[in-house]
Structures are given as C-alpha cells and as structure tokens.
Amino acid sequence: TMRERIIISYLDGVATFKLICSRAYSDRESVWLFVAPGSNHMTAPPLLDQALEVLLENLNHETFSFNEETSPSRRHSSLLPTKNTTWAFSIPCSSARQVQESTSTLLAAHALAKAGNVTLAWESLRALVMGQRDDGFLPKFRYLHDDDDGEYYLNHTTIPGPKLGAHLSALPLHASVVLDVYALSEQADEDLQHLVDLYVSIYRYHQYMIKHRPDHNVWHPWETLWDAHSWVEPLGEVRRQIRKSKWRVPFDVPEQVLQSYDYIPEVYEPCIYLLECYTNSTKNESTTTCPPLRIQSVEYAAIWVEAHRDLIEMYRVLKDRHLDHLLPLSEMDAEQPIEWLTGAHTQLDNMWDEEHQTFLPKKDENTAMIVPDASNFVSLWSPTSNVSRVYKLTSKLMQRDDSDFAFDCGAHAVWSQGGCSPTSTISPLLNYFIVTGLYRNDVHGMGYYISNATTNNLFPEKGFVDFAVAFDATTGMPFQDYEMDACALRSTTTAAVVYNLATPTLPRVFYPDPPIRSSAIIVLIIAEVVVAFAIGASCLFLNLKMVRESSRLVEDEQQGEDGYFSAAGSIGVEHPYELQNERNEDAEQSELLINPTSASP
Image (tube, rainbow, N blue to C red; front, side, top):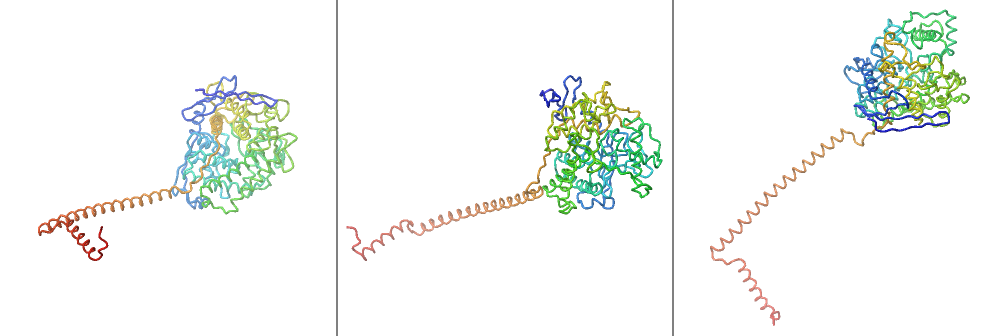
C-alpha cells in the first residue's frame, strides 16, 4: 500500500531530521502516516482503528430536557428542540461514566468529525455546554450528579469529583473545535442550528472570563498543562499559609492518586487547599482570604488568542448565512470579541523574554517566572509573523546541552521539563499542542518529527497499544497500570490525540449562503411550472379551437360552391366566367361610343 516516499530534511546548523513519509490507505479514508528511519514499527492504519475504537467505547448517553425554565440562557434561540433529546458524549474513559471532561471531549469531537461521525461530534459538544453556569462559566468537568455529597475522586480513577473539580476552568478550545467540526460537516441547516446555539454559549463563556479574569490568567495548577514539578516554587506562598493555618487535607487520599506519576506532596496539598478555599468562597463560608494565585500562563494565553479569533470567525460565518439575527447580541456586543482578541494578543506578545529567547509565564505584568516547562512551546498554537521568534523558540527543541531550556532529549517526543530532567514525563496532549503549533507556523519538518516520535511511544514491547495519559520520558513506557487507575491505559484524550495527529487537518472551507434560499428556489420552481403549464394548456386550447374553426370554414366553403354551380345549371344560366367576359366586351363598346379617339388604329 506504499504509494509515495518523501525525504524531508530540516537543517538549521544544530540538527538534521530525515523522515520517510509513507502514504497508506485504510478502509475509511486516506491518511498521511510517518515513520522514523531505523524504526521497527510503523504507524499503520490499525492504530487509527484502535484509536477510533477507544473513542467509540468511551461514550455515554444522557437525556436532556429543553424549555425556558430549565434553559433560561438559551430562550432567545428558536432552533432548540422542543422535546427531550438523548445525546451521546465523550467521557474520559469507560470507567468514568458520571463525568464529562472538557479537553478530552473537544479533541474527541474533532477526531470523530474527521472519521465521518459528525452527528456524534455535535451531540458531544452540545452536551458539554449543558454544564454551563447561569453566569456563563464553563467548568473543566461536567458532572452528571453534582450534589453536595459527591466524592472527592471518581471511583478507581485520578479524576477529581464534584467536591474538587466544580470550580476549575476549562481550556478555551471550544470555539476552535466547533469551527473545525462545522467545516467538516455538510454545512446544512442542521449544522447551522448547532453553530448558532453553541456560539451563544461560547460567547457568554468568553464574556465571563474577560470580566472575572481580564488578564487571561489561571487560578489553579490543574487548569494548566504544566509539569507538576514546575509548580513547586510558584506554590511556595500557599504552602506558607498552610503551615500558618495548620491546615490538613480533609480526606484520605486514594491509593491511585498516591501512586500517580504527577503526585508530589509539595504541590498536591496546595492544590487541594486552593480548591477548598475557592469552594468556600463561592458559598460565602470562607474564614480566610484565598492565597493570590493569578498566574499568566503561556499556553493559556496562546489558546485564548485563537479562541477569540475563532469566535469572531463563527460570527462571520453566521452573518454570511444570514443567521446573525437569531443571536441575542447587539451590534456593539458583536464587536466585543475584536477588543478581546487585541488584548489577548498583546498579553501573549508581552510574555516574550529576549534574555532566555522563549515565552515565559508571569506573576504580573512586569515579573516573569523562570519556568523551563515545555508548555511554553504552546505559544506557537497562535501563529505569528515574527519569524525570528519562531526560529529562536524552535531552536530550543533542538538544543542538547546542560541548559535548563534545552529540550532535545533523544528519540522520544518533547519532555515536559527542560534540561532533560529525569523527573520529566511525556504527555501526548502537550505534544499535540506543540506539533499543531509548529504546523501553523510552517515548521513542518520538526512537526513531522515530533508527531512521529509521539506516536511511536504507543508501541510497547507487549504488542498492543496503550493509550496512556503519560509516558516515562526515559523509557517511553506508560505510567501506572489498569489495576491502579481505570483510566490509565484507555484515555479518550490520548486516543483523540493519536487520531488527530495521524490524520491531516485540512484548511477550513466555509460555503456562503446562496443568493436565494433553497425554500425560495423551490417556490420559484413551482411557480414557473404552474405558469408554464398554464401557457401550454392555453396554447393547446387555442390550437384545438383554430383547427376546429378552420375545418368548419372549409366545409362551409365547399358546401357554398357546390350549391351555387348546381343552382345556376338548373335554370340555364351561363358559367360565371362567361358572364364576366360578356360584361367586359359591353364595357369596351360603351367606351368607344363615348370616346372614339381611344380606339386602336
């Protein structure tokens, strides 16, 4: 099935990557797949089959009721169903059926749309925004049963329960994924209905975040893509407040959490303290002021830039299709995302640190945090025209020395920490963001290399694919096992990452509304048919009438001549032509008598 072989070379004086691209065909679609020279394994179509199998396996169903009482924020839209509807939606893994996680749902929706399951993608996205609060906030987790007696952790997983995860913000990927799914759909009226409803929800989420987090900052470590070790120093102030208040974790930490790859007591305890503080503040039960943790994270800011840009694009699509009148927004509100985009872009631009030649997070506008974390490369998620910065930033990915910001650590994908720290991990999700950012900035050679290295980590010696949440950076083996964490090896996030990396993401193409709506065209065609039929019937009626009239005239004429000739013969009258000749001769004689000179010589 190999059709083409292309050798891609990327040389900048630091390293050269040579890749062989093999084009293979699966039963579903044609995909571009990559294999590194000397590798014993190739990313073959069966990997995509296994990834899609995990995505379809990790689905749940829920029946939603739509009316103005239960959905007051959506009463302005006339496109909502008027009866109960059951939707399928993605869950983190098959064992965590009572929760819907934002990032895994969004990436899975994109993958399902690529695989041709656009209906499943729309249902999953719409189910996700049903967790939106009345004030517009979209949380990281939507719990199917979020009562006060909920668990701290979902059974046999490291996923926080309602008591911990209710106030965590989601990564703002909603607008970008919704546009991707719409571009992959038939862009019919049903798809436009989903686009209208989702636009309202996403707009309200952006509006809430701008109001409550104007600097696009994060309030909790679990809202970011950072390695857990990168949070040890930034959480120092929280740990001091914990010691001062003599606070303790109010529950027994489950064994699967204690054995997790990212469990660090110096980080975990401040995380739980912050969550408890935020929860009590929401209920007005806080006896102490929550520690200030308002960090401007690089990946968070970059994703927000694209989120605002795609929200603007969503409105443009709806306006081109003449559906903007369905949105409960004034003209001024429709222009707000442009201001949000300008502010987010300025904030990301100010995070550039020329001394370290990379983007760095900030405590405030003027204080940079020297954190050599791989999440800083997610700044490429928002494409930039500054080629110099792209070169300086990507050179860190090929830098192999003792520097804290060196990330060329061998054949595996990008490690989570700089300097090739032995405590680093390999996150497929983080590598997905980095690879996508490289593609968007036209650094295709390095993007292919990291994409190939990421997928090769999914081929352990035991012969089957582990869609693990994270891998050991030094060995390339997945962390934990199924007995310890039910979601460890069948992660929806990782399966979606693999599918999205292995299948090409084509440029979005949006079809404008035709000059005449389809309903108007049908009415026009019917009118034309009726008029044409009327004209045809009239012509037929006139033709038949003329034929009958002409036949009658011919018959009358024939009958008149025959009657005249027979009557003339019976009374001895000469033929009419003879009578005419006699009249002509009499006229000539009369003329001679009157005018003799007129006679012929």
